[in-house]
Image 1 (cartoon, rainbow, N blue to C red):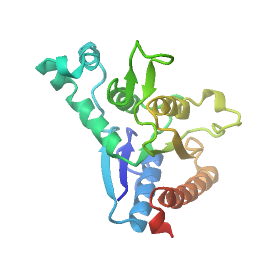
Image 2: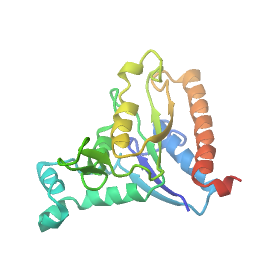
Image 3: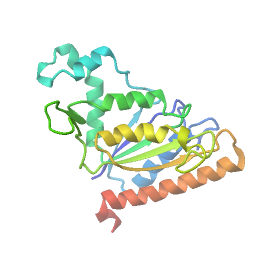
Image 4: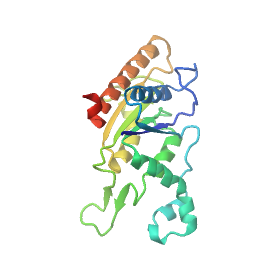
Length: 230
């Protein structure tokens, strides 16, 4: 059985497939999971909406607790890290992470950054030993075979690799850098553009992105469940 972790981070609570003012990133992430379930109905899907119920931001107490060795933590430290532990457990258990992450002012929503800050955890998803020869940090999820599917939306057009606005697109780099740091290096994505323009450009962009999502579903089913795709 393959486990999916489905994350949404848009502040908009509905999908643009159902609502005129809905979220395009939710539209794509829902489509991915729906298509996957059509092909693999017995696979487990865990859903977390960090857009409407964001994780608590990192605080000084959180940092103190996280960098205290587990066996030396006081009760309040375990309580402080309880939410983070739950988020990390979900991430570790997942084979495929499907993340709807729209572009807000050229970067990811603050809600999703809060999720990242809670799951990039010393001793849980990355290791640190100042006495270690060479690099003192290492990714603890490396080699686990996890895949990240990053599904985004943008108001303008041209944020892709080699395009005119690539340099100011901080969504994919901002998400992929910490994910690679903890060992999740296999990544895929699609994005809807033209949201601020509407009309034919937006319609065609939605069609292209949805087609890309369908292709990704088939590709990742073969990658994570080869027997089902034989």
